[in-house]
Each structure stands twice: as structure tokens, then as C-alpha cells.
Image (cartoon, rainbow, N blue to C red; front, side):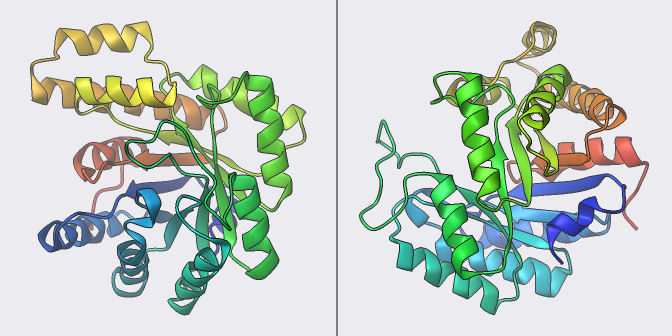
Length: 291
């Protein structure tokens, strides 16, 4: 199933994002996690792609097994990092061979230890180029990233929005946002995107906080803002792991409700391979328990 079709019936689209584990044991735990989530009937799950293509094979294997054995629609992330164009074509052909129909096209972060992205020889320097390449050779449903608070490398939000419009015009079917915590940031971003003629669905990306130091690090890296109220609530329970999880679930539930009530087409959960909080938020929103 092409993910773009999920947005056509008016029902909220719910999805969960995972990353490839580092050991066979962790991989099997992830399969069990996804199998439990499948009982909640999410619209799709996605699997990320390691720096420099370090998880290429595992990403392909994961999305194929999730779709074929668990029966949940799966999307593979694909980045420009460390790949020539023909290598990317081979990965895409491999995905098609496994009947995968959906790809999230990303530039990707610089490899560990690098301070800036360097275009691979014979490869691409922007997600725009990757999207255009996919469209020129394959018939995938293509997703891409969007940044409600602006990309950390963009000189300003207006420039970032213009670049997003170019990327969408190259053949993007839907967008998933970077994590954020204030629904107002999403709605302002969507209004600005629509004013530029961006018409594809924009799925908000939500991360329930489970560790205070971790989320502070993430937001510094990606340029997202932790609202003062959330920061104060987290500071009060910083050293109590269970209390942090409860606060994270409560905030993400309220945030997601506000988004859905305001017209967002669904929610994409960044799980960090820990499904407890995302599953709790999902069940709070839908009242849907695992069968």
C-alpha cells in the first residue's frame, strides 16, 4: 500500500518510527515490539537508515520482514550519505524486490566526527536531488522531511520553506516533520507552507520524552525548542525516571490531541525503539487497546 493513500479517507494516520538494532538479540526484541504494535493497527511503521549507509542491509531486511511477516505497511528511510547514485539505485531496486512501496528520502546527517555534509563522489548533496532521482527511475511513494522551526542549517525559515517547496515539486507525496513540542509551531508552519503552494499532507512528528538529558541533547542538535512549561515540568522530576516518562506521555498526549483537533492529518511517533510511551499516547488518543 502506498502511504499517500492513507490520507484519503479522512481518518487520522498513525505511524511509528524505529531504528535498526545493533545486535541479533535487539533485532528480535524489535520484531516483538512491532508485532505488539500491529495489534493496534497503525497506518505504517518506518525504519531509519544508519550514517553512511551503515545499516543498509538491515534496514531493507527489517522493512521487508515487518511487511511480509507482521503484516504492517513499512517504509524505508534512505539518505544521500556515502552513496553514489548507482548504489542508491541498487538499494531502491532491492526494496522493490521485497515489494516495498514507500521510501522516506533524506539528505542525512554528516557522518560521525564530521562537522558538515560533503557530497559523495557521484552522489547527491540534497534531498531534492535524491527525490528527483527516485522519481526518474522508480514508482515509489516518496516521503520527505519538514522542519516546523526551520532546518538548523538554513539561514532563515523563509529560505527553508522555499527549499521545501522545491523538494515537494520534485515529486514528494507527503511530509513528516522534525520533532517539536508546541502545536502552534506546527500550525504556523503548515499555514506558511500552504501559502507557498505546498499541498501534500504534512504529518507532525512527536516524541514522548523519556529522558531529560537525552531530549535536551536532541533539541540542541536539531534546533527544536522545549517550551518553558515543559522544561519546568521535566526539571521537577529530572532524577525520577518513571515520573519523567509520565510527564512525557502527558505532554505528548495533550500535544497530539491539540494537533488532531486543529486539523493535523495524524501523528508520527519517534519511538527510539521504546514503544511503551508512544503506545500509551496512541491508546490515550484512540481508546484502542491491543486485541
